[in-house]
Length: 454
Ligand code: IFM
Image (cartoon, rainbow, N blue to C red; front, side, top):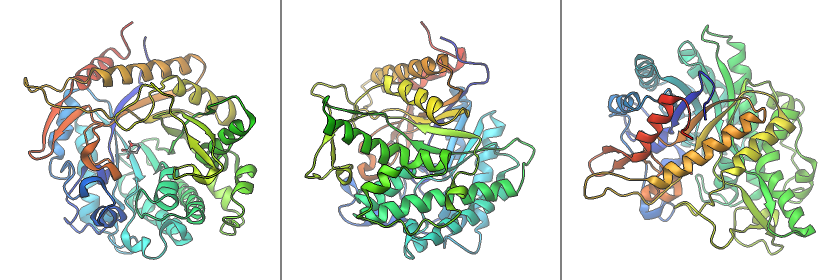
């Protein structure tokens, strides 16, 4: 099962999840520093203070990728390293770090894909309202200009935001992520200002022109097909609402320049959407060059008028996981066919742009066996099934250009701390030793032959 020539085989990480060195070289505090240090927010009180210490172990991690023939690395820039206050003076040492990272990738023939925002908002901006405030969108565009101005000559792929749904709904809506609010109204305002920030950042990058490396600009969304758990109208309606909140609330403004009416109606008692100003949707729908898709699971849902404590309670819906379903250590159902379904839908309903799967992977209860190996056959099965599903979508006409396994390394899994391991490389946190799992060797084989064995 071959993939097209030049298919971009990558791995991904994000700044706060791997870098550590939170107080070094002028980095300012982010909302995740504050949140993870607050008692009871993160499992076992884990923080990203050290994480995988990639800030100090960059060369080793780059060599590791080269050893496995990885063709692309998706990383994110920590805004608080570039502007410790979230606005104003630029911290040159922060820019220097990412310049070293990018040069190190090029020296090894690895293509960089840079994400500008993967959730580590500078705390001073949160103190002024964070993403519920329009000011943050404007500051994000300025920050984008700084990073783009510094690295556009050597980074081809630019992702504005990673998973704005997670920032809005988990961060401001249900409070399990930083900054930890439980307010639907705030989640809606954050959604709009994140999208506006994306649009303004797109305009900022376009206005600076192409650097000669044919910069490709896009955004990464986490998307999930949604279906009703029972064949009855209230559950079909529930599925429509979740699809609206999780998928269409982001896809429609970006690709159609409008918010989905049914979702605006549904949330009209929570918020009057007066934060949407004339011209915003035009900005948000500024043309992009590619879409990044993070796929982990489908949602099966049913109506729940009582709105029990769940991510989708504001949609009066609860998620149902069928008894006996195969699940990852996160408790997420394993449904590779959902990836085919999702990619075909994007192609049919939204756009014909190139797509990159910017994240896909699974957490497992990995451990080092007495021989010193981490044998993660289930991860291999997971990745292989999803690659087959992606291939099927390509056969159906989807312009898929690349795939990034989440993650290169086990890392700080947000509210779950270090308890969940997603890496193809095991991290022994006390020693920071990297132990490639069986899946890393398997992935190297896939890359080497540019496809899967029958
Ligand atoms: O670890 C996260 C990542 O930061 C964003 N996408 C989902 C991953 C697994 O939860």
